[in-house]
Image 1 (spheres, rainbow, N blue to C red):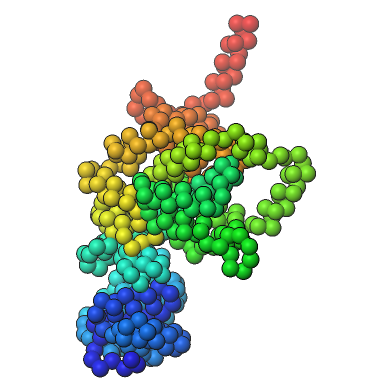
Image 2 (cartoon, helix red, strand yellow):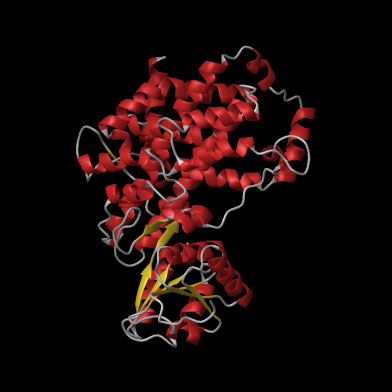
Length: 475
């Protein structure tokens, strides 16, 4: 259908993968929807899909004016376009035809401060503006995504004011980076130290998906290992170039963690690995140079005496424990930003909406929801009694996997970062006293003492010379 016989309930502008599938999902639920895209072929494609998938009440429009006027007032328009200036351009094109009380909902991966700016800008026209994180990819958008604000539902909640919805989606993506990195490290260890085949890996991940690691990412990883290459022999995963792409939300997460002084080493490690993966030619050259310099691969010798059954179970435990640390870092970042902005985020509710529809959806998130229900002011997931007990139970296996990987020369930066985070966070006293003494020596930055209040400064070199002189006199 190209023209709507009646006004639509909602509009959606931006018909790339997420936009098309979300629009079809809305239409399939019985809500008439108008769609618009600057590239008209995308409109035709979406309308055709609506016809093919059951004569769905989806109506295509080819100009901003025609699109806006086809929607029932007060209008709600979802925009799903590339972050940055394309969003501003879309808002400008649509808002010329909108009226006070109409609402624009940005469902893209947008920088939260841009959302806060746009809220102010469109309010001058009497328009409402809402930043809404959307997760779930193509399948989630079509069949049920996780939405991060609007009204309550299975995977929907109102996040908070301003740019909070976009910020929460940004951190969701940062956690997603960490999850994917940790899974890839588990694969690397099992494949190269355990010598497991793709068929075996598929079965292992399928088994893991029936237990504590049950999640969308574990499920699809099992599926990936089963796919044969239709352009040649063997499995497709082995033919894929080892360079990981990214769109920026992981980088934003790490930048925000640094600005808020929140440690997020697992997420940062996953980002660093994506950068390093892009240096394919440099890595190939380094492999040759270091081999000529005498570096020997240790994987083969270690793999000979390995107990595969124990290794598989150890890796499962290491993956789970590392995952807890990664989520703890993401939640702590959300808490710090919530305090700074006065958003009053509900962390148990965030875990609830992430349980379904989104990329990081997992049974594990129900445990996080319950942890924050037990204690809304929980300092870290690491100190929730249930998670603390699980991490203590798994730490021996975790250390074995990390130690084995280091001995084999296999990088596991995500697992190492998570373990270092755990070990640093759990220690009542750290060597930071020495660092603070160094800062005071070269920069007179002062220090605090553990035995009395106040700030102190020491003339370290003079004191050291006096001590040396005293030692010399005794000799």
